[in-house]
Length: 89
Image 1 (cartoon, rainbow, N blue to C red):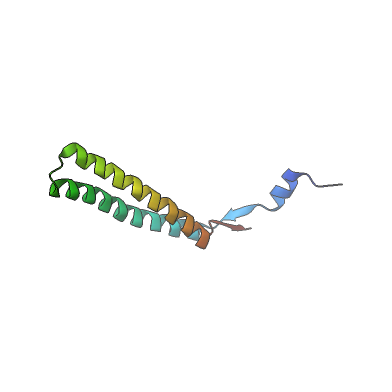
Image 2: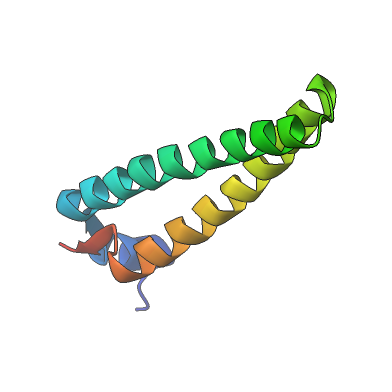
């Protein structure tokens, strides 16, 4: 008889590699704090330098923060490719 799909999935269960999880989360916190700090500071500095006003400054901060999220998503993908979060049991 053929094995059911669920039986095959259970036989190939993967366990969490906690060392890699902690490493990737630590990197994300460190880099995330730096990237968002730069994004907020750059929006504030550019708006202040060119005297663009508060609302344009907030808009620049949001725009740069969206770019920071984009950077963090790609960093997450690359980190998980190098440090797999799951491994064979």
